[in-house]
Amino acid sequence: MKKIAFTCLALASLVLQNSAFASDTIRIGVDPTYPPFEYKQADGSLAGFEIDLGNAICEKAGKKCEWVSMSFDGLIPSLRVGKIDAVFSSLGISEKRKKVVDFSDRTWTGFSSMLSLSSKNLLPTAESLEGKTVGVQQGSMQEDYAKAKLAPFGVKVQSYQTQDQVYADLLNGRIDASMQDMTQAQVGFIEDANHPEYSNQKMVDKLLPADSAIALRKGDSKIAKLINNGIKAIHADGTFAMIQRQHFGDLDLYSK
Image (cartoon, rainbow, N blue to C red; front, side, top):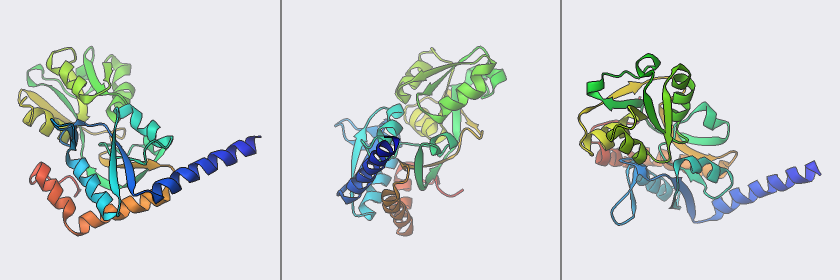
């Protein structure tokens, strides 16, 4: 009976992979609440650095991106059960995630950071944050870090479904600091949202890997090959550099 169940599961996985490969589209999950990487425009359409990169990668692969919006903490579960073929949503290549999904080649690199009012003189350490409340997005590696490295030392960790909710409570004083991608915090929060009174401090830890990539179902070698070939192609012909310049000017998110 166990052998039959295992065989059925393997066949189901194979059908998912083959159907995705045969389709003209690649279904990519995204949480569009993380500007400038991914966000919704006034007309409801998706935009952002990773949206443009994803569309370019799909084009090079001879496919069309079908973007599927959902909450961040639902992305990997949806990938694993076959509702989507990939996740491109500022996803760091963490050891925890590598246990349940595969990753494409690296797409960009960026550190994590802590945002807080400069006037509070807080540091991204357990000692400085003891008795304070830190906001993080559910399912993020910053959430894993805060719960593992800060909560045991008297730091309250408050999780939110979206990054917008984290920022809303940071601005109204319900939390003392937030943790997220450093570039997103600088461009999306401090610069574009005009909050220069906040400091954006880099965080470095093994639980906060800097490299990001596209998440794929375990063992889905066909989609992995398509996407990795697409990534190579957009670097080879300058498409990546052009898209990066459009969103970040002279900032280089790829070269280490």
